[in-house]
Image (cartoon, rainbow, N blue to C red; front, top):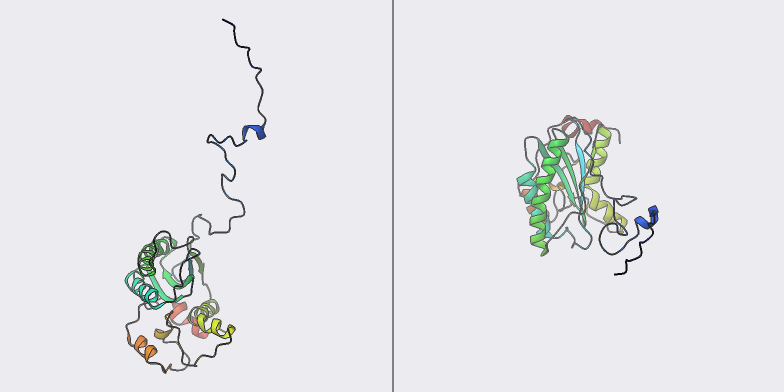
Length: 230
């Protein structure tokens, strides 16, 4: 029987060793993506309980607008049920078409994480049901920023409560001076410079409902922001 000729051993170069073969192993696009644009999965930065948190939560592309009445009812119900914990509170909120703004108080990073995890699960279930969809709802982990000064808190309060009014002005729309955003906690805010008198039946009815958010407990959200220079 003829012996097969021995093949000469060839040392692989780094490029040839990593060449895609279609049989598993390395493949184009594998590994950690470069230029990450989503939120980091690293540990959250620690913060003291006296600092309120401005939290932003975005949904995946292709989801219908969250500013429809059914979705807004879900958000109010979930915040009322899950945003009144001893160590985690949602004090204000604003719902936009594809994201939510929350102004929260928490005893620390761990409490904020647990509170947001509970909210995420409840929001995903409720919103998916009312929007008639399944699967992942939120695009990434929430983004949180600690508010350390009265001025920062005042700016964010204005941003969260008046966000839709600002967008309306950018579109050239004129709103009544007493118009309050039904997709936010503005109808229940008691810090307006002038008493808000609802001039629409729907707004009067909304303001008559119990406030879905928790009462603020930190000095910055109860008193400090009022003396800020803005």
